[in-house]
Image 1 (cartoon, rainbow, N blue to C red):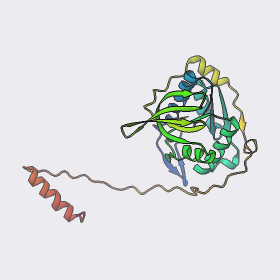
Image 2 (image 1 turned 90 degrees about the vertical axis):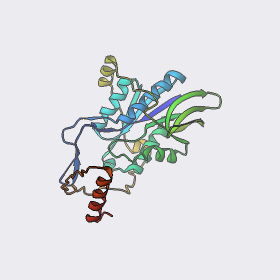
Image 3 (image 1 turned 180 degrees about the vertical axis):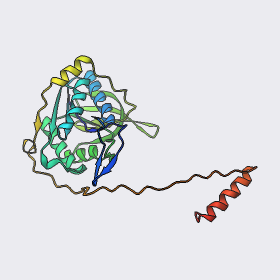
Image 4 (image 1 turned 120 degrees about the vertical axis):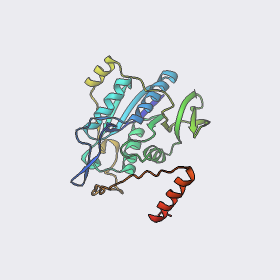
Length: 258
């Protein structure tokens, strides 16, 4: 089975977002593999161990994306590719989906996995958009791989829909997002980290994928810092719940909330 995982590099979750000169900045916060993508990498590695095959990780981005790719390699992925050129610097979600879909076709993937969303953009749109461009089935929030039928090339999966377990039989190739309930991501081994640090990661251009620069339909020309609001807290007290409730209603009417 040829398994491909799409990953993204994001600021550390402890980073504080600021706006400087109309641009978003995270200051000196480190960049890391998107935490949701770690679950997708873990699911890919478990699928390889269970059903056989190899795991390839891909990411679209500048050299900062190497942090995410090397982390995935250190966890156990066999190969990695970075996709980038200057024309992709302002790519939106749809343009990103075009590029990733072309890379997945080039890799002749059978099983494509993503995290449920990225913690920076937070749109959760890219995996479904990739599946739509490929014309493949899409299943979100998978919590387990139950079995694989080599003859019919179908994968049995379970996903969680607000506490309801749904079992599905999905023909491959297909695109899935992985929920955190799938499994705790493994820690990279020391040897895995050393190997990943020395790995030569090829860079694919748009020409390598047979693409022209995709049209960007959504752009952020400027980002503004919202004005600070002064907030005051007032505690309402009374001798009984009824008295407190009456005071609260009177205050809401006074402030024209009611």
